[in-house]
Length: 170
Image (cartoon, rainbow, N blue to C red; front, side, top):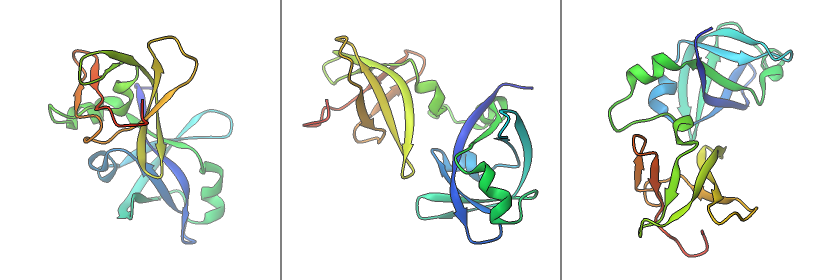
């Protein structure tokens, strides 16, 4: 199997026809979905065909050809949606990147002081949260909303993000 990446997560169902309510980070990638992989209970990934993608509030409503009821969708609730990484990379603009590419980047403040290293990216209510392990060795994690106003610079090549300090955040 090709290298696959997660582009969203099935959060719940929408209606009774097996439409999935999906949290996502890149609407351009989600609206182009054709074939995706979902986790089976046994840990294997199963291929599904996407028949439609619509947007409602901060979520995508995704219909799969193989799923036609709530009962058929429920085993996949909480599952990530995976696609072939090469398909996504080829469709990205120069200033775009994959969320997974943020993991391992160094986070700096405006003064170029190291805050820590990004070790995870979580989605909460459709918004991404950067999880940073502090450079000073503290055990706590710093949670930073991934919004342009707070994270104005992302430089994948230099493995660096800049976080604008906001009172109470760091």
